[in-house]
Amino acid sequence: MVALIRETAELCQRRSKESHAIGFVPTMGNLHAGHASLLERALAEHTVVYFSIFVNPKQFGPSEDYGRYPRTLEQDLSVIRDCAARFPSSQVVVFAPTDPTEVFPPGDTQTIAVSGLSTILEGKSRPGHFEGVATVVYKLFNLVRPSTAYFGLKDYQQYLVISQMVKDLCLPVKIQGMPIIRETSGLALSSRNQYLSPDQRAASLVLSQTLRELTDLIGGSRDRISKARLLISDFLKDPNWNYLELRDAQTLAEDVDRSTHITILAVYQLGSTRLLDNVQVEVS
Ligand code: PAF
Image (cartoon, rainbow, N blue to C red):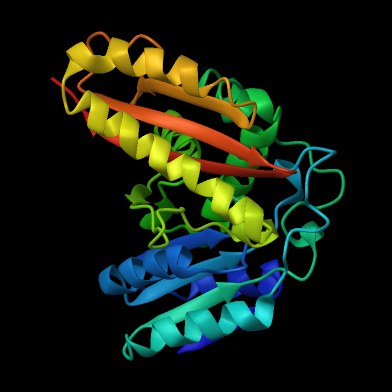
């Protein structure tokens, strides 16, 4: 069963009557198979799952795509219904606020900032982005009070920022990172892929191919990281890379000399579309 709630007051009323542990999937809508995989996992683990669809204005910069971000509620509800149909004894409560003021009352004053992690890589390219993400996720956690919340690892830095916020503020919620879902070409699924022209789509494959090439080159051996860094500096001659970096997977520190888990994070830009991807590599 799928219920749709459009107002915060109704959400709070419904939530106060729940007796089950709640699984939660926060999204900005325009759902694809990546989102469906989060919902499926949440439904496999909970009888009641809350699912939010909210294009959060606070995480877009002034020159970013907030206005043109696709809003496709009817289509999204049908993805959710298809998924929910496979779990007939479960309930999905969709929270899709009619207006941003349902989440951010006019004149609100609170911001959640996760220092350090928020200002590097994606945070350096998009000042204020992670404050916007942490603030909305914190507010949604307060409204939904979930036991477990599910986040795609495609936005790996976002996953780390939220995990850090939960730890810092002692929030009683488990953060479950979920594997990246890819097209057969290797391109990671993203709502932004639809902005790509056919030529850009072909050009975008360099992103996942490069990450694969670097993973193969490292081959699990820390000794090969310096070779990978050399190759990265060669790749970076292509100006479409916003960044392509090798970091510690837990802290995102540049020094990986003692790291056992590293991550290679990248943004490849085609026109005004920034495509994010990453891979996790274990080294010894
Ligand atoms: O990953 C997203 O879709 C958004 O950043 C999130 C976590 C729903 C917050 O708006």
